Image 1: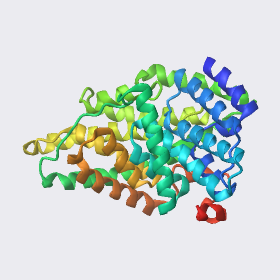
Image 2 (image 1 turned 180 degrees about the horizontal axis):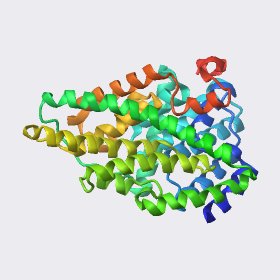
Image 3 (image 1 turned 90 degrees about the horizontal axis):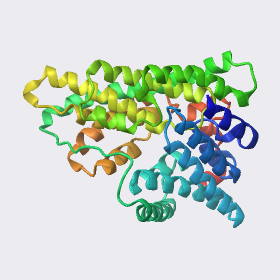
Length: 375
């Protein structure tokens, strides 16, 4: 509540674009405004997200760093008066650098910029994003060392007989990713329907409800990476893993719905880790002769749920691959991610990012500016 009293007026007064998870605002800036993002967005987003997450908001840091990096790239480009096509590239460079530095994942940063921000692959764009991503990664490593925000265990694929189980997980994760997007905006709609007061006060009043959820399940407080790691390590029973998965969907949706500032990238990883580990525990009990590692299914589930929600299979594969540095899980990872993306796309062409824009009457698939394609 106290956090909401601080960041609510801040966002409402200086940068309403900083409300929510940030990536859709960057996408529409690239598609329709030639990459122009107000410079103040970077500062307001950084402060608002830090306050929201630090005081308990159940959201991620990655969405904010994408918007912050993109706003910085746009501000520099506008100051240098670069053409629109170049400006959109600078926006994508900021996003790529943010992901690269945060996750220590330079390849995933590049592909995130291409696959989600620019939504197109071109040799020219690739080269520039590589430079930005690598530079950001090197600077981040100089500042904080090789430590990463997630410490994931290494797993191996026992035999190819396990692959059908990962395929089933991929299909389930695709449904879960699609469902996460729908729950997110259903709860946001409910918050819009109930709230009749001033927008600046909404995060504080909504903090009463969110706080009650966090009191019931304190594991949902903040980003939740330590809890994610404990889940993969087998610290929780199946029932509690499923409870945490459902709780995270609700807590994240509430945080966004009441006007919080934070991303949905980390919650989708959390959701996939809990659901995947629960699935792995169940199939390990059903097929004891295979000697399955439930945490491996949680690891694959992280990527598959994000892919199902964002329709970004290459980013999903690379982010988990770079976090683990382990090539042995690449086959189940690829199978699950492709199936999750395919099934989710079959159900709906809208992603967790574009669905937010569609609700505002913006279809970037139809209304993209020519500068985007030139980039």
